[in-house]
Length: 103
Image (tube, rainbow, N blue to C red; front, side, top):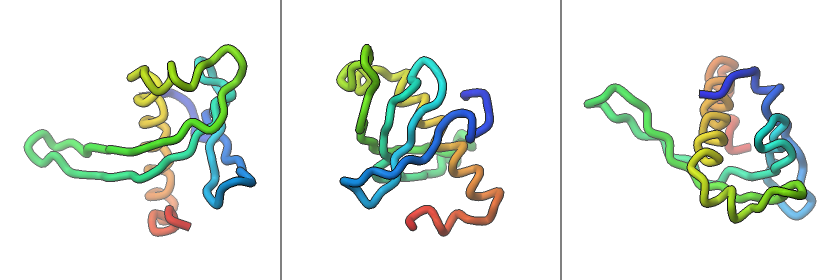
């Protein structure tokens, strides 16, 4: 799991070419990467008492020196943005805004 507050990890950014907000990463090692979540599916693994999170994402922009293709191929990047997604969901639940995720 990543450390830090959500506001220190990402910022929402508007993309003129899309109705969806994207997220811009504010910390290394992915500083400056802008991406958008696609579909998100949460399933409960009752046998192991775990929540399984599956999601799609699109890399919208990468800073110089980082390859979008390399990011797509690394498990570390997907885990990193998966941890951010979990923090986003936890924040929504704590603020009783979970139904607002699709707006």
